[in-house]
Amino acid sequence: MNRGIANSLFFFLMMFSCDDVLEKDISKKEVFLKTPAPDYSTDQPDQLFWWDYLEGATAYEVLIVTPDMDNPTALLLDSVVTENKLRFTLSAGEFQWCVRGTNNGYKTAYTCRKLFIVN
Image 1 (cartoon, helix red, strand yellow):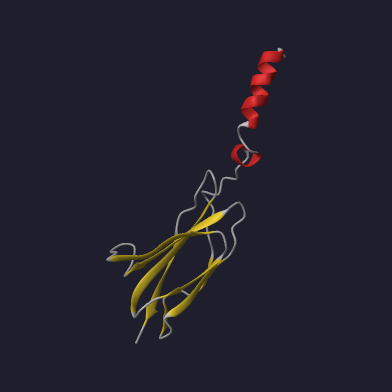
Image 2 (cartoon, rainbow, N blue to C red):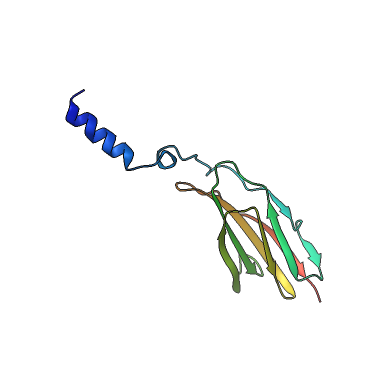
């Protein structure tokens, strides 16, 4: 291989980290939600949202809307976290919470659940 081409190839590869070149495709994977359970109803406004870690994900996008993603009237939370838990306080009402895994090159679809906070 010609020395100029080798140097150019080396320079090109050095511009990208191994994570950029070898990022894991997670787009067909699913984030498994733990708590709150599906259609959970409670009088406790302080909630711990918890999901399984997803192999290949470096962060998670978390949304909480009211009443649901099909007919949202308010976006209460739109956050990116690196842990698999998030504590958030809600007032009384009907909500949907959604999580998706992300990395530098890919995102999963959102996984969502309904939640009801009663007086």
